[in-house]
Length: 519
Image 1 (cartoon, rainbow, N blue to C red):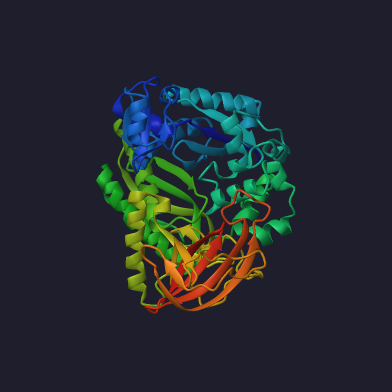
Image 2: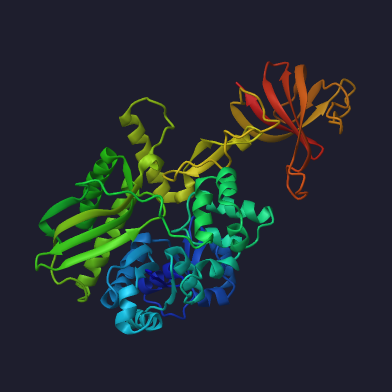
């Protein structure tokens, strides 16, 4: 049985930022993105700094705090020294993200005598380059990552037992392993009373698939300690590798960035023609002295062209930085190759948002959105997917651009009380007062009827006399969750105001809201 070791460098963005600024390991450091802390050092946490804090609040808690802006390229460049140190002990490492890597250790354990000996060797090797780390060993890659967070060696065949005690919210704790919507899945399971991964693993696979979708099935396989990515891998189509002969040889970061962009475009044209997307990418290089360099990057979702270019640039930047520091390759890079190690269906990369207005328009729009996503973060650009639900807002699942468009709920399942077509063109959630002819508030009784005939709407932006109305249509949902905003007695009604505006109203928790406008 193959065994996997995960090596985790804690708070790596903060460690890389401290290294770039020439700070020590005991200095408080925080890394921010969009004005919020996304990583901080142990010294900063001791002073009260936490992830999610605004930059100003973090500085107020720790006046000596060094604040750095998130720099994924810098994180990858500094992590190359760690990866190279691990490669010297156990070859063929795979980088999940800067700060986290995995490697198969079945052969290394025989060579060094035990898995514990391998882990100790790797910790010492990483310490020699000035970094701290924790290791974890398990049968499956995902379990090994969580074992590294705990500093544990999981006995063979005990992956599921180790995971069973972890909180269900840990399903979304590691972004390099989680698919789209994993955080929403973990939150939903928690609200349903499923508090541990072990309880989730006890559910029927059929029930999980039919109720929660494809990503939940992958999470369920992980919870049970089953093999990673077994059903999603495919045989590699022939001739997908792309090669660049570098003339002149690459010895500068700007040349590396240009080479990465060119190769990424060529690779993705090959992948698109084969109808696949790449989830494990090997970046290979040969120097003018004949030295061969190789690094494998693994991702939870298929790489986009821009994500591929970023990883190539990061890796070349790391190799060149080590060369100029006298520790890496001894000569410039003359041959560069991209080799897709593992591919899956490329359906997740399609973007059917602009209809059939032409491939050029769609590609231009996609490039613009990917650029915005690169500036503001993965969740800054999201596209809608038709989902199951009763109200119009519930029938839309927003997924990050580039992620697999998996609906939160199956739209093909029956949804008693679902609003009939057509749906409102504009979705709102604005409070409004519904009054009768005498100016008294109109409510929905427990029998599902109006307390009196509605005659007028009153609000800052949706007021007016009613010329027509239909309903109400009662919907009882989430009766098991009193804390939910949708629990208890809910009803919907359609109305037409005197200016000729048709609206959908929703009555919940004894208040009326404008849920949508028909256009």
